[in-house]
Length: 234
Image (cartoon, rainbow, N blue to C red; front, top):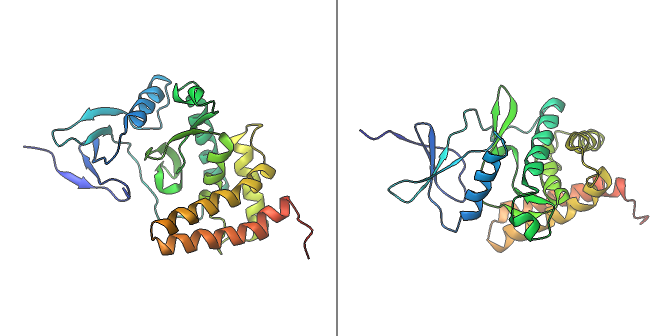
């Protein structure tokens, strides 16, 4: 008897189900680079990402299942959780510096490009696993870190005051701990990340997503970017 398929939440790009201790994903594009990256991470001893196991008889990717919980609706992360998240991103990046597509592109690291709480597996309330590598591309630490700062801190959400968010940004960047990434540089990069996501959503008719990103951009410009880089305008 075949094992039961259990649909997993998320999977906005590809349908995802759990089968025993594996995950099955239908793919609509070439994922050989993703598969190669997962194999590279495995060789590096990075235990916080799934392993690629091949394809099933339906042509779906087979990945190892990372036990834990994905906290889709949580947005009030503690300092300890933010510190662990930033540290995990740093360890991921460090493992990718010699992944062949990275030096071939003249890049620093392989960017996840969507490492948010919704793509994180938590164990005992701690960020413990990274999933959904569909958007990986060679790039810079700063570009990838900036997106995670935006989403992990929830910049633009009412829950946190500007003063709180400035402190939490400093905490996240310090926990990442690389000289190429400073709070000043993240503050300068954030508007580009947010504007890019707004444009992406608008081009695909995702009105709510575009408006959300634009609102985050407006808040960030006033409360984060202008704090680090005052423009002197009246």
